[in-house]
Image (cartoon, rainbow, N blue to C red; front, side):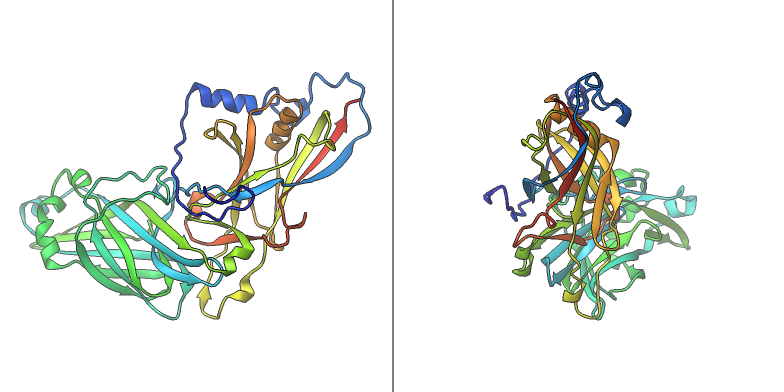
Length: 401
């Protein structure tokens, strides 16, 4: 990135793929060398002469956007829980845009009459289960045909998937509920053969939704969303939503320069490093490590009628020095005062290994679990940095003499 490492707001999307295999497994083992649980921390050192236990607080030495796109692809069992489509001017985050993709699979066997007669009617029911933005005005969406096959698993917000011809335009109220659109007769005629084909899943690649007006981003969920097709004399087949994907972008506002944002459905996870090798943290038996973080309440900056679903779950990962291997530490909820606390034996084990110079730890990474599937964010005060605004590692340890 072009920005300095200690303050990066560059939202250029970058895709990083996760590899498995012996080397990745080895890196994870090195991250936690000799540490299976808290009772084993410092094993081999217990006979050494020790001092009294201490507690220190280490403020983060580095905190920055990492440009790693969120996983925004998913299916009914894993990954993102909805596709997002719309545009919104957020008073803090800036201008956000989301383009959502929907694909379908036949939910039942085709009847003989459906296979033998042309399709004469089709409609699409979209279950709107998420609204972010101005609820006082509707959102106009254009629906395009997707012409290429795409994979939802592990697909990230910075991925581009090509679209084809415009199918229809529809206007949707910015509220939760079902929205039904009738597909044009020319589309029904053109896709008659595919809709009745045994290879529908391979030949049909779904729709893309892109907003042209409004000030909200809508979510289309799996439950209740379906494509229906009817043939003469009335045999109807339903196609259920099988996978989703959202491509997103954001143009930051001037207000966002005061904060570092951890945003859902975007490409800005946060990298965090701590000075674990500082003089105030000598070679020691590490008993417990907590990571704490305070976020800022920005609700007063939003006008009446602006719906802003909260981000409820935050994750912390360990990143190895190969920049590929990642180990989930914990996913925690946001407290009522906006604070987060990660308290897990993995943290203690990793820091003990770092203290003994037996770890491949490079940094920690804050992220938002993909199943939240929104565009909400948490804000960390950036401007005048203080120890209370930075993430903090609270370490309980006994120094070795």
